[in-house]
Image 1 (cartoon, rainbow, N blue to C red):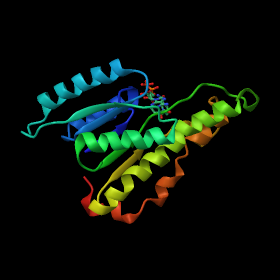
Image 2: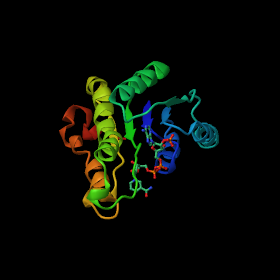
Image 3: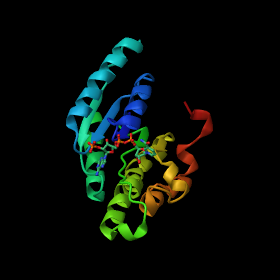
Image 4: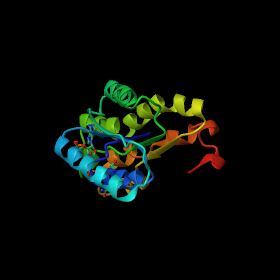
Length: 183
Ligand SMILES: NC(=O)c1ccc[n+]([C@@H]2O[C@H](COP(=O)([O-])OP(=O)(O)OC[C@H]3O[C@@H](n4cnc5c(N)ncnc54)[C@H](OP(=O)(O)O)[C@@H]3O)[C@@H](O)[C@H]2O)c1
């Protein structure tokens, strides 16, 4: 089963449409735009019906939550876990927030913290949610959707640049990344 954090938007949508071709069940999350999530579900069902020959029942669920709040990340994960009744095999941490504010003197502390909470902390919390079961089953994949902004402040300012580093991936244990088991 694959849990996609915010998969109805542009990059997330493309990831979901690719994963469905591998017959992955999907859990899509959104914050405000339920209609887009529902449209994506319809598209994914069509993609699955048209391109996947397996007789297996394909499950796709949608879940609403504000990922700027760590407790909501945990709640979303628990909801997904319950809806699918099995561990998350692939986490795509894609939800992102960014406003083009270039200069540090124009960026409030609140704006800085809010950006980090979605682009960085949510990835950290979601990783903690899924990683234990990945270790237990000796398989898992975590994909962080980052940004070119991580290379430097540039137009998007220090707030977005700092928030897209997602450095903790290097601490993921070998147990969930055995190369021979990779798809
Ligand atoms: N597009 C680009 O050129 C580009 C470039 C570099 C990096 N990125 C990164 O790639 C990722 C996806 O980008 P995109 O352009 O496909 O994004 P997008 O179309 O703007 O969609 C952003 C997604 O994040 C969700 N989201 C925003 N705030 C949220 C919150 N508080 N809680 C939960 N979900 C929230 C939105 O949900 P709702 O719509 O439901 O609110 C939406 O699904 C982001 O991390 C972005 O920073 C994008």
